[in-house]
Length: 186
Length: 337
Image (tube, rainbow over all chains, first blue to last red; front, side, top):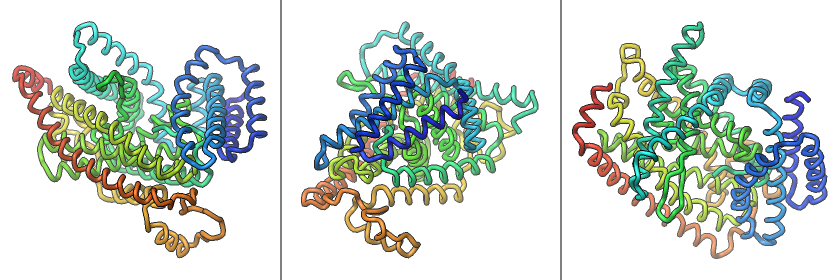
């Protein structure tokens, strides 16, 4: 199935659910049935799916809690939570079946500004690298310093992030040199 | 502060996407016109850097932990226009790769965290630096800017939620801003510590050099090469104030009438759609308790702002005094540049 079709279908679904009033139970039921069918066909990795769902759900719940303060709050709360949860599941299904390269291709297709697209592409390229680097630096620091004091810990995290920035700066310098060497970056 | 899908109504989604699109377009043209091409790869890698930095949790008192958002950090390191692009890229990637923040709420999230946060933050930073020159001003400015822009972004976020009817405005506005007045402290402290560490590790990086960057060591140029022009800031200022006027002002006493008047003059027919654009969706927001709650929030907010402003100077003095204590380190790091 082409990525653009998949992405467009998911976006259409999310937008429909998000805009619909919170009382449209029939629409939400249909959406839920559709999602279950999609999930059965797509078969996403259940553990990754559950982990991502659990990471985002508390946030959803927090936002939905504000609804209680309205008159007839609990119905609104349930409606909003359901709407939001369905959208989240749709997006999670999409994310698990689309690769990063395909996603960048989709962004190019919908015509977002060229500069933003370049920055996003570079960012996705270096994201894993820098996250790994941050974890490595953290582990190295943790194995050398043994303070249980929060203040000391925060302070060293500040300098860790600063070092991470300086390394990124040097890396960007090398990337630019490599771009120039290949005739780009003008 | 990432709003998920389903909490904003159609007009808020439309308006926030419009504002975000204008903001990003202005920022992109600003970067294209004014910046060295070297800035583009730096922006990509810096985006990945801020993303990675957001994943590092730091302990807060009481066993809880927080993390950086980085809007002001990006603005002070890369310049306001580049920061808008970088933060937009981060939010887009978070939305489409990690389902963090909704697709339909992406416009609102970009407006709050990628436009208000770096732009207002940078304006506060410049203001404090003009007031107090030198390193103290720089660090205090960054601390205060990080705090204040977090609060402002949360205010806009609360306004968007309240205007969409996702809760009682009298509760959402004070609750959201109250929470972020606390988390903003962490943001301010961390931003200042990171900037102070960078200054310490590579002292030349923040020197004000206004001439063209080609004559300086290559690794130094990206930072102070950024533009500081008035035109961009005016455009951004207009976008931010328009957004705040639309999303927040309906909840502030007498403003809606003026806006309705303007809307009628400009050509919107407000009365055609009941409860349209500039009305708070909850007709009950004028219950006796709410204006008082709003006044109390405003009072607490201004008091908190003054305290934060003063504390940021104290913090800057502490950080800089603490950093100067070991003279060997500073001598060693000077030779690095």
